[in-house]
Length: 326
Image (cartoon, rainbow, N blue to C red):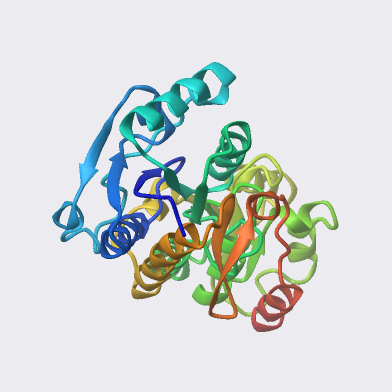
């Protein structure tokens, strides 16, 4: 029999479309099961500065369609220290919160894992990040919406690229993970994706040029994952200007437009399923797990596995893009 009577919910790290759908699902599933719910504002920072408020069913009305997070999000330097985490724990005790649901990405779940171990505290995580870089889940909340945003943007860029016969480098988010660039390139019919996972194996730009980059096409679009590993779209463009000055090169950095917007149906459904599953997991006595989805089935993934780096990229996606870009 679960001893949990009150749960807290917070969103942490970068926002992702679908976080509100997850907040709604966690809140209503908890209330359905007779639990009290408290919303914690601004992530872990809200625990330290006591920004906690009661949540009821109507607290989460009309939010499923909204991007961002009604709980706000912030990165907390204080929570990274043992002293800060002790203050956070005391706040949870004072508020009578018996367990936490944390919605966020790699950094957020890493913080949750440390906190859960230090204080033997029940936490369930939901994977909220557009990067899709968490292990143990096929999809993360926000990824599908970001992918659709990229596709729509690249479709529009193609119109001007074709009109001017230009080579466009389009920078997308993802940090050390190329899922958005690779699948965005396939979805938008781009010629190539320059991704972190391939940088150490080959000179991706050199390969593109040597394979007859433009061939019979009147424009070329290349998606580039942001970050230090690839150098980003600007670095690629500078290299082309130096080594291949015959190309008319342009750069578009999509930036934070990828993180916003109304979530797709897929992200709303995923967030709703995961949110309800988080309450089931807590009532079942699960702790220190992330709710994931594998082959359309909800699974519980230990934090230690979920936050392990280097989620593998499917080679067949790389091959598909190569075949279809001829």
